[in-house]
Image 1: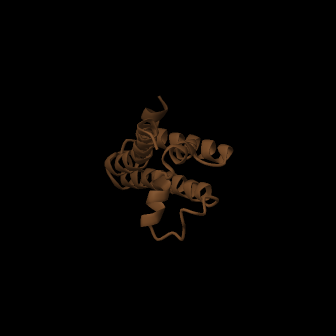
Image 2: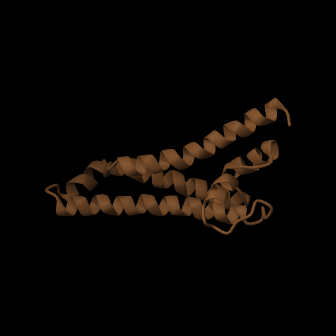
Length: 132
């Protein structure tokens, strides 16, 4: 394995971890509906790309250059019954992780709506700000 392969595989691993952890941090840290909507749209695009390619393109590049990928690492430390040798399941599990991030975004949007309804701010005013 050459240094170039490790470098490219490492960059793809950093990209994968950034997509997962930065997305979760933004979801937990913000109540801005525009940011949450944008994040949801980005997650939908990533979901459709992964579905249309049959596997995550970043995972394929990582696997080609390093022999393993970030998804394999995450799935080895989580209780999902997944073995690295069974690469057939990786695309399905990747779609599950992306779908769960999308559900997390939608759940946070619902929480923000409930906070607006129960709080002093009016929901209609906030929706008008988003639409403008």
